[in-house]
Length: 144
Image (cartoon, rainbow, N blue to C red; front, side):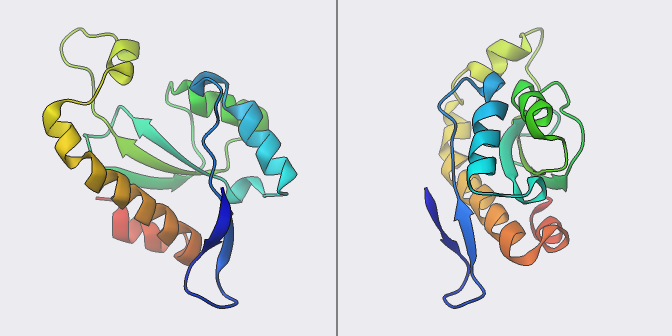
């Protein structure tokens, strides 16, 4: 979906919102193809993704970095480098001895689902702030 973000007028930003239809582990190719089609610099790409090392619902924004074992990020980094923005949505660690793959693919619990809409809206607001106001301001506002 292509559109504009920001207040009405000449200062608003053109954005493209995309969710690759490929497997997450293979998302680098489709994201890169879209990035090249729209001539988007790597530094203007924003990936919103789950993060095991952050508690459920907590957001962290950053530019660049490693993939921390996240196969989707690994694919994107392989396709076009690591210097893109990330909005990391905390999902926490698997309980007990549950395998990571099983944990990230399972449904949210009832308690998590009750809060999920709020957290998704907050992540969307963080992306909007990042695009309009820049990383430092977005981090100050949304890194909780």
